[in-house]
Length: 335
Ligand code: NAD
Image (cartoon, rainbow, N blue to C red; front, side):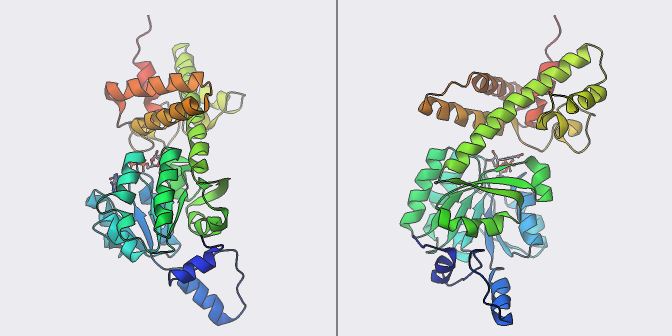
């Protein structure tokens, strides 16, 4: 494995700035650095999160090579002059830095190792960053396959939701070879305000899974508290205001409140459309369950949250944002 990004970039014929090397001072060097840093970046998976993330890379001047299994979602990028590829393999042929933002482990495996996957055409020295939330053991397997091809894989799942993806304020949790972190950071900082190195491949996923288990628990707790307050005669906006100046305050209460009408610009005020799907939350809680089993860790509330989100998926909530747990609880008639 290359000891620094500058070396790896040079090996691939597309030198780019690592953030570790310093400019030598001449105008030519600085220009060549800034021009070289704008070589195309591949982006695969342009859904709720991938779409705004790719747009932030565009805003930073990176030309994109895009692919999504639903070509319609690439239309607006094509109209803006970006290239749309016909497979992940074609993306890998045209870009030596690729970001993937896919729903689940199965999709990441397909995009990397499938018949027309990235690994079919990946160039030596390429940097492949998977920002999907997937099983850490799958990230480790993918990293091994990528390494065999002479390229580098890092897991870099995100936290922050669609709002943070739009504003470029995501938190990235990065796992992989530390010497390669600066290279990933250069791209990830265009989309996030916090880019945190967690350790070896898979540790980014482990951090993300812990975060989402806590998020699910706090969202259910917020929905329960809001529902109880409303049924006790409190105005929901007033109750949210009180919680947010008190010890019950959390991200689910002050940034992503699950009660329709309490906040603007969040899924609860848009019939729970967009945002972070209930199916995705159920998937992340399943990953937490797997990690808890393999590490023999008790996660009592995490397990309960998993069952609640699984039940919601089978009761018509699968396509709604995960904050619809409030609506789910509301539908339980008082007895
Ligand atoms: P999404 O379902 O909105 O988007 C996923 C995109 O991937 C879709 O456009 C889909 O067509 C595409 N896709 C699926 N399989 C593909 C394949 N084989 N090849 C190419 N494209 C494929 O999901 P999202 O909400 O953008 O989430 C993406 C990832 O980010 C998930 O792992 C999720 O857990 C994680 N995440 C989401 C949020 C959120 O708020 N939505 C927040 C943090 C993390």
